[in-house]
Length: 453
Ligand SMILES: Cc1cc2nc3c(=O)[nH]c(=O)nc-3n(C[C@H](O)[C@H](O)[C@H](O)COP(=O)(O)OP(=O)(O)OC[C@H]3O[C@@H](n4cnc5c(N)ncnc54)[C@H](O)[C@@H]3O)c2cc1C
Image (cartoon, rainbow, N blue to C red):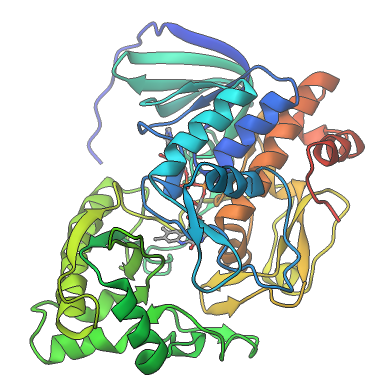
């Protein structure tokens, strides 16, 4: 590849902190709040103008759609997201579970309140671009924004960027599957002008969809108990629309779920475009997938208007502000959670939380209807070969199937809270994050209301 040599440049230090969190999605918000609540001076850096990550900028509202009567769920900051959204009137009952969706616009405000109440210093519109290393110790980062290129110095850094951007800027090892194997990317969208009542009647009396209908983009192996459960899923209508010339394009990438309806006739959280072969760490791919996804979403609406009762007058309300990406880099950590562990109620000494046995993607759909759960090990947040750095969220150390469980937003909040607390405890006790005292860490997490056993 052709390169250019940039001149060395003195960079002003924007601020100094004890704990620095990069990325303000479900993992990053939890990491920052947990670090601040544990007494550390904490800065949270986010590239967009709001917090929430996929919960807001992509438009993923179904935060805990796995929860059933028998589910043993985690406790901690993720559960607070739901409670606080409900208190602010930014939550609605989720259609396939006993949970609430979190309104993707309202959560921007809820997240602001939560981080500010915890005493976190937030920098929005601030893009991480590089790490500052002293040998193999991270001592800060370089950011870019409207204020130019600046440095932030920190004693501990937590990478919650989803794509492990900080890790990639160090020499720490990570994995990333070839792009034809990565989970698909999605342009989420929302419609206005929908007659929800008419649609619900059609679903109840004609469509009667279950998880057994999942086929095209989500070919799934279930544990059997899922097959008969209701699932808000549409598939066949799009192939029909293509065959009958209702949509001009290729319906290959179209199939998926709806979420909630508002009193104003909006259909929210339409997750019906699933495009394969894109790498979310490649700007060419991101550009192509955004544009193709928007086109596919408009074809979805065209088909819905033509065939689906209640959608006759539906119009696009908005696309998610950015493409939704499910999988890219996974760090190689002190521990790697694997398929066998998440499918067999894995237990560990270094638990920082629990997550129900919920696997969604890469060929599996298992819902935690029976109270089964696994413990989340601290070791999968600790990268090899680099010090002062932790990760949380979807880029933790996990194999393909474990990732499809741990990528879920609630579990990202579990790893975020674990990482933020560990960073603060390691500072307080003057030890490296790799050597943090598990008894102290677990005691602090229990004091914060986290469920460990
Ligand atoms: C279409 C779609 C549907 C999904 N559906 C569900 C679902 O129904 N339920 C569920 O639980 N999960 C779902 N997921 C998965 C889930 O949304 C993600 O796995 C989860 O949001 C990951 O959380 P995170 O905190 O690791 O990363 P993200 O949510 O991606 O947040 C990362 C944050 O870091 C910021 N950032 C990234 N790079 C930088 C940088 N260089 N500098 C500064 N900031 C940066 C981003 O702007 C973002 O705010 C879905 C995912 C997609 C794409």
